[in-house]
Picture 1 (spheres, rainbow, N blue to C red):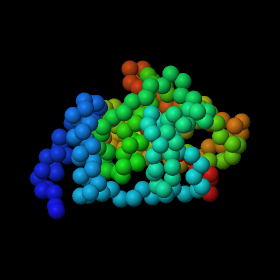
Picture 2 (cartoon, rainbow, N blue to C red):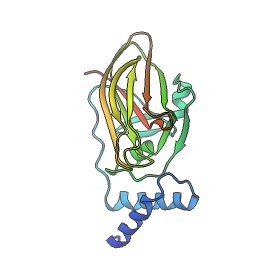
Picture 3 (spheres, one colour):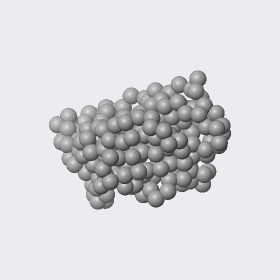
Length: 206
């Protein structure tokens, strides 16, 4: 059985319009499209990142598997000591570009956000790590541009400056934990724009 290409493209264009909406009918349309896309034109497998996997967090969402590694749900991470003071969680229904498999797609469609500055505190054993951050633009093209700070020091600029539904994995950023906790923040230059983040993973430096 084959899926008529014209109908598939028409469904894809319809789904492009529902990214931030949670109307039950539109959620159903998103799930239908994703199921068909996974069958007809599946995404390539996510490449495993170098270094021993330590932790992945799906901010605002459920536990997922990405690149063969199990990521914690937001609830699990909070119970294990994660702190995101003042952040709000949300779920979107975007079809990521480039397309990704189910676990990564779920992660990119769950998010924490906060006006201007999003702060994250994560307990970790003292060691050297590679930090990766995962962001998708779920509002409109080039709306976000974030500064990353680790332990108060500026590390990178322009994170999240992406086309609508575009996503990126940023890193590795080498970090050293010496006091049992990792502190990082994402900040926008405009106080009217939220800072947001979808996922974080940590790996021991090779």
